[in-house]
Image (cartoon, rainbow, N blue to C red; front, side, top):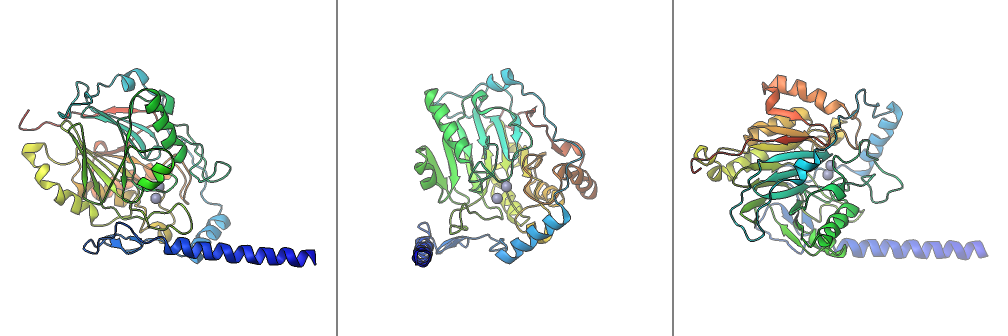
Length: 387
Ligand code: ZN
Ligand code: ZN
């Protein structure tokens, strides 16, 4: 009898859960919905060229089963390169004054790879972090999920004051709660303020973490910080942090236009015409007289096998090199590899495939390279006809 009443309680609980899920599903109406924008849908967002890029549950099971059967990913033969960070140099970057709109610095632009899609870009007088993750695992819980194989290139506590964090989308390897809260608290403790720039729909998540310095943007919208323009650009991907929120918040790449550096951050993306569109959209701001195209593009090169599952959502190195050409970038740096084992290729495969991709597409090595975690690379300041 006791067992039966327990079973009834279970059934009741399951029913309540299902009703709650349905309510959650119904509540997912897109509050930003603008029918004139093709990437808006009544309940979320979609891509310009591929609509939905996610696979169904049965395909997910097939992938997981096949990986397990084949013992994938195979271990890397070479460890992800890592160097000790040059902290005096990183911390010594000269930022512009809080009331400045000049968008410049006495220090030359520099980029430090912190691992995965986390980079510190010091340019135009701002310290900018991309998709920061300092946690051990890219997962909703720290007990399981993909574990990092290399420590962050710079510890969160050792970072210089961060002016802006840009977020590409809400997947756990790009939007890490502990890192966001840690960065916010660090800024507060230093008497400063970090501004979080995010795609549409992510502001409530930040506010729920107690972070209120957030600006959310739609594709092609721009926000300026001390003379530097941040433009959210379309890429081909999706979003989700749970089971009932698929693509209810937007995703994107970022074009950051400062006086001494125009840079692009690709986030997570499949290959599409979006990159040629981005180049065209910004063409009037990137004429030869104004210094030309992007000085550097930070492009994802990892997490791409098996292709039948990943193709629409993650570029492989071949497509990343094509992205580099489509964007018209002067140089590109490969990221989103070597840190978390998310997919079937070994963690050291992406830079090896990049070598072949460069050869095929006749792109010189110094035009598309990878960095060591912790490495800082200086970039020549952008020169315009005006200066
Ligand atoms: Zn993603
Ligand atoms: Zn990712």
